[in-house]
Length: 93
Image 1: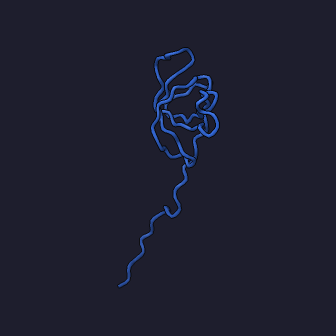
Image 2: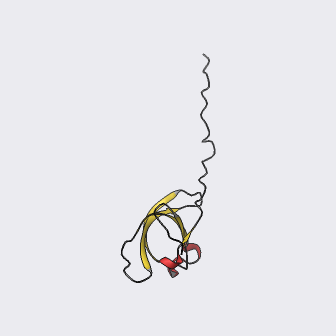
Image 3: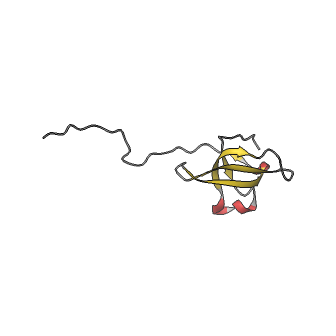
């Protein structure tokens, strides 16, 4: 496991815990990591679950195996269509 730190995006999958297998795997932007390991090799994570567009959807606390954490590339946030630069159009009377 690479050292993870707050601000990293991590992949939480089956290597972290069996509860994250299949479609339950997720990407999470870390806010904090537990300081004390309740059991050897396990830790608490706090962070925001990211959707397919890279936007934070919900804050979660997870209990996972540290060895299973993988730093993932941060997703690229894509704006909604039509959210381009505003242009002032003169109004003619």
